Amino acid sequence: MSKPTIFLSHISEEKELAAIFKDQIEDSFLGLVDIFVSSDVKSIPLGKNWLDQVSNGLRTCKAMLLLCSPSSISRPWINFEAGAAWAREIEVAPICHSGMRPVDLPLPISLLQGLEASDPQKVEQVFHLIARQLGSSAPAIDVRSIVNKVKAFEAPYKLRLRYASDAAALKAVGKGIIITNILSHNPETTIVMNNVWERDFTMFRPYLDNLEAAGGLQYSFRVIEITAGGEDGGAYGILNLHVTKELYDAIKQI
Image (cartoon, rainbow, N blue to C red; front, side, top):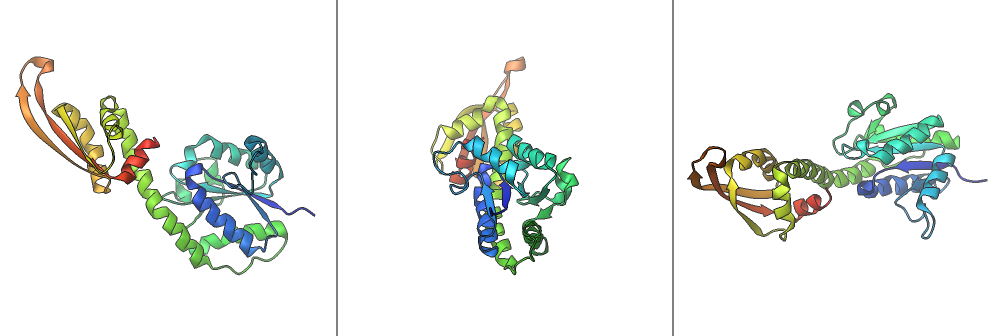
């Protein structure tokens, strides 16, 4: 008799969190349930067609756990996999983390009973859901241990999400010259940008302020000359940037 499969849907950046739940579930249920995780080599062995294996997992799974964060919830594959489970009318449990809450989930996912991964009382519901698929009682689990692992993942991940949001905004203004300069230098070095118009710096400043407050960079701007002459006139100066490796790595991903 084949073991029931639970499909754990996630984006690649959150594979560490997916592994936390996969390992805990398999250990708690003594291997009586398979957890399909697309980033796990046991779920998709080397050499197997990735899409075929995912499609088979969606066809055969008994329930789905959906990792939902501010980053993942808008990704096409997350919504595709959730839609496939919805169409089969199987249980789908949104597991919110890293700043996402059940009340923040968009329709139609918000119609499902979501929970927060850092809430000890709620996390236990995941194991009750799986127990229903097995027709058994839920095992005793160390909920506090799971929550501590979740929080250890969330702390640096939420910072990367914050970096990515402001970095993406910087990329969208001023023809992306700030991002281009950052990526053309090594992190933890001082970048000197000469002849930056003050009117351009005014566009950059809110995002630079946010990134500085989050600890991703330090910056300074100094006006060196003011010119006259209509649209071509104005003040310009020197912008100095010192970017951390964490922010640099986040920028490379956008």
